[in-house]
Length: 233
Image (tube, rainbow, N blue to C red; front, side, top):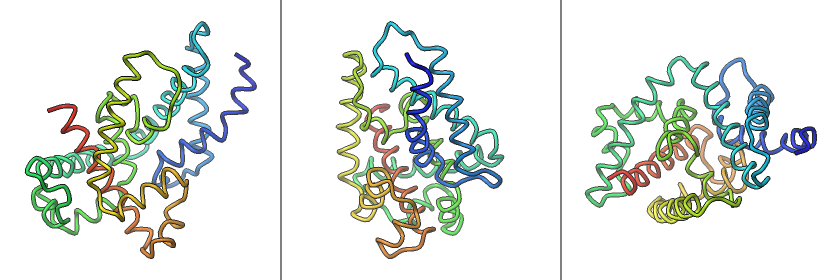
């Protein structure tokens, strides 16, 4: 592999991964800081890579390393993330419980009550802890190897077992998406596939940035609950 060419070509890819992974930038950090952290993950991937395998396989491996480095840094610098993830786990378990009874879109008040949270704490958690949500979702299906929505974007050549697993996960995700509200689907589409930021999405759908963040967080938690319900039951 031409290492210099890979490093130069990966800057826009890493920047995109940062944008999708670091939902709320921690105080004292900016996007370029996390791009450099992601670059460290890329360099580690290059160092560890078996060059007898295809470059398409390397891309998938490198993306995993890059996300891993970024998420590890978020865990290091966010002193309340573990507390928040515990709370978020309660919320996703509440969503799973409602899904088990056939209710895929319970009200916020219903979810908060089942998760033993008051509604103000529920709303504030969704608004402020978007990064903790991503870290929690990242741990759902594959021990941190992939963020759910990223799975369906990488079409790199993989083993038959990996392809079967990802095709199955893609089918489950599509089914889960069909149960989300129209607004949740619009927000996820604009964020993940149109690459718009929270401010741009807020302007399009006529809501505040804070509300958009809440909608996105709830949608991802519901998807996590749906996927876990299907894969881990």
